[in-house]
Length: 142
Image (cartoon, rainbow, N blue to C red; front, top):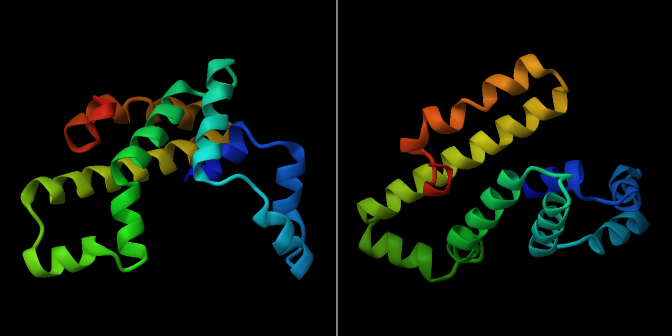
């Protein structure tokens, strides 16, 4: 999601070219030099500050990273989170947070896809999703 928004709002032409090149060992190595998640979010924020990207996109990505990064990293790399959740179960507040974050990511993906169509008839209705479903989205969106 972050990469899609970064490509849409903040990536340089050079970075985009690196991702459009046919896959070879050389192009794979060149793509490794692209910004990481933190830098992509920072660049989106800078563009939002210039009025060239939606402030809400930057806020949502930043909030999601702040809230979820450590736990997601732990699950991906077999850290303490999956071990404790297996042994102790999932507290209700954590289950609700995970569900809201998943809904938030799905909403961001839908918004990004709507923007990519370039059709106002598609993008305009997406703006009603956030307030209409605020009770099941991350708190930032309320």
